[in-house]
Length: 314
Image (cartoon, rainbow, N blue to C red; front, side):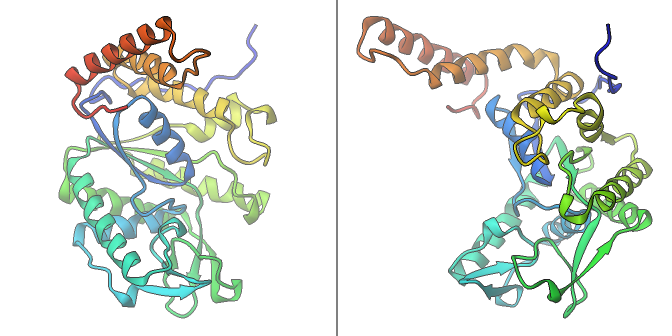
């Protein structure tokens, strides 16, 4: 008996992610869900140097500024609600000190440039096609930083505009790194604040545009479709009924693993998982002989993995 309609996901055969890969992730909060799994299993990865970026134009701006090696100055930041902010970055970078924020922005731009150059795989997760345009400058912003709604004009990007933006992103990445594979996903998080119908329209624009730009170095992973179809039950959502639950994230990760993680790395993933669980273990008697032996064996397992992969630390 079949209890699900399964989404067919093509298993990749070349240039898969392994422990020598270097993965860079941009985009919505779902990119951090995937990045969290990569972190847990100790793959080399960098997530959202400018924080969560919800729409494609914000990602394009970051990649462009990284390629151009932009230097942020006092002209690029503003003060609101006792903190300094930047239109290009998520509010998690905001700071009470203007100088600290500017220094942080420039550090993260340098990091982005370096990571684009080094990346074997770049995962781009698009969250919404809705943007907010600053009326004073007519520029779209990555984050509104809780400024008054009247400051912005809300706009739905059409498919052609998104297609152009994604092509620009791919071309800009190619300037620094002609070998990186780009994996596009659409976030399964529903942007209900835009409206139910508006959210559906937004996701449709994103999906259509992505499929227009795919080539032999850019691919689509159907995280959105898996959530909407295979996991079409509210038990797979958090209490807000909007974000995927940990179970749903693990389910989608398992599909991603099957499609994009080299099977030769699966054994190491099992070893890392065993170590992670061992490190989380809370003993009843920490001074007991049995626990000391457990700690010794755990240390040996860690040393064995670190001999193979210098970048892994626990």
